[in-house]
Image 1 (tube, rainbow, N blue to C red):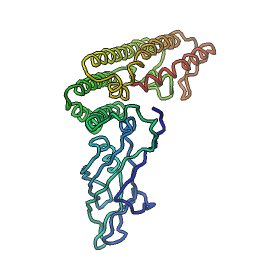
Image 2 (tube, one colour):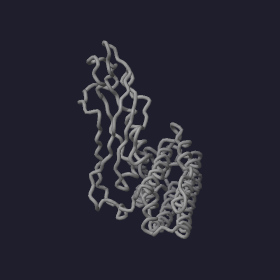
Image 3 (cartoon, rainbow, N blue to C red):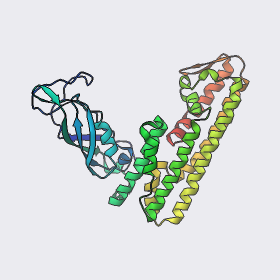
Image 4 (tube, rainbow, N blue to C red):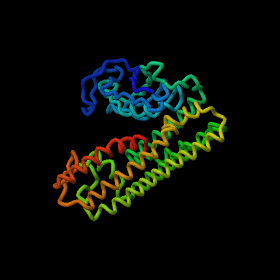
Amino acid sequence: MSNRFFPVFLILALSVPMLSVSASEPAECVEDNADPIPVERAAPAYPHQAMMFCLTGSVGLEFTIETSGRVTDIEIIDSTPSRIFERSARRATSQWQFVPRCVDGSPVEHRQRTVIDFELDFEAEDCPSTIDRIDDELTEFIAKLGTSHALMAEIVLHGDSEGLVAELERSLAPEFEGDLGDVESFHQVMIEEMMDQVRAAEHQYCAGYLPLLVIMPGLTPNPDALDRESAGRLRDCIEEQLQTNRDRLEAFKSGHASLEASVDLDEELLDLLISPFFGSIDAAGDMDALLDQEAALVDELLTLFEQAEGSWRVQPQGIVFSNPVQQETYDRLRLALLPIATEMEQEGF
């Protein structure tokens, strides 16, 4: 599916013009008994799973506009299809800012409703060929999977902020039976494996080290600690990470094989429920080769640091060696590792 989507948001029931006022300014009355006037109205992010499956919908919300102009007490009063757009709509609305309603010259709290429509500008060829097979049950199923995967991504990026881990655990509770229940269990197992890897990385010396070392050395955690003595420890840790990635890839392949054997879903529909979240099973074989390439290049890179003559400095644009031959070797290895590290990160490894 090509990446030519352009989200369009139609925000209804808030059709008054925007004011060019900073949201940080104190709320002041503009006109008695006038409806609140929007000052800052963030557009909601289009959920990734909705975009992948060309899903559109709407969310009706009710909220309180406080005397400060802040939005609180947000309630979802209607959502079609359910769950897919609710989190995005709630998060965007919580960032809105208004000039409050005024009565007798003083700001007062005001309860207001709005509808946020989520639409996509897209061509039919941009959508999966199986899009016409997504009925109401599959839409609900995709919504559940999308919620869990979105929470997983937030935890990877931001940690357990706002109780995300507990929310993820609740989202993994089984809701479907039969074939969809089996696919749901497969997603649950894979997400739990990824969570185990995230927890382990929090305590690893080299967590996040390798991609930064190759892509953005200036952002490498504690770059001054990269010396000959630490290279061996870094090697052991990265090798452990690579083995963890191999184990997770093997779990995906074996789990997928078991799923294929146990469900009565045709290959096309099963792929629709797996590939957008984990990549296709065909691509999994390519990941094996990528992991082998990465391991060999990393070994050569760390050997360079262990055996380097002279000194080096970690710079934002790369690592600068005093020895020109070693600089040439590092540049070659970095260019070879860069696309691999980027692809592995995109695939969640």
